[in-house]
Length: 248
Image (cartoon, rainbow, N blue to C red; front, side, top):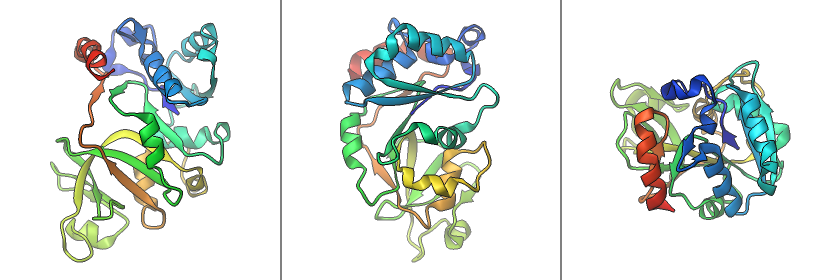
């Protein structure tokens, strides 16, 4: 699933007339770069959610004959549903027997999607790609890399279904938890969809993972050489072209 429904407010004035998915980098729209990378990795079905200038994305894909693969639209024109709500709404568009790779349209990266697909083991409900990069908000994992919680190091706020993590920020045995930054790229098993039924239409996927990680197998996958570029601001557009050159 390519998350492409955002308003792209940080890319104004470009997004005053187009969705961020169609903002050009290296001569092609951001959406093109993600679709091409997925197609090259063997993905045959892609779901794209749309909201802002939705018809432009629909027309762009139609004009390019969906690049020869099965591309389906999840229409969020009535309401933006955030990352979790978007996935929940699109449930019927996915193969119920295959993990779902989720990727933001405005992220460029050096991830080998074939490698990532192989890392999602049969007994795992979700695999979150993480790294050691510096940020203010971290996911917390035990030594087996099972998700335990979330921490904002600037404010000290901790979220977790485990009382001892919320109280101390430590493991059950008083040991420090492993702190990793989330890349926004993750692999989601359709087995988790029933746990979304009690959630509202609109919610964050991280809030969902944090609410179910104590009764499902949600793990972190560290990638030491991970390179990410969030093409969400005008000043990153110039960097994006050189990023594509060095990572492809």
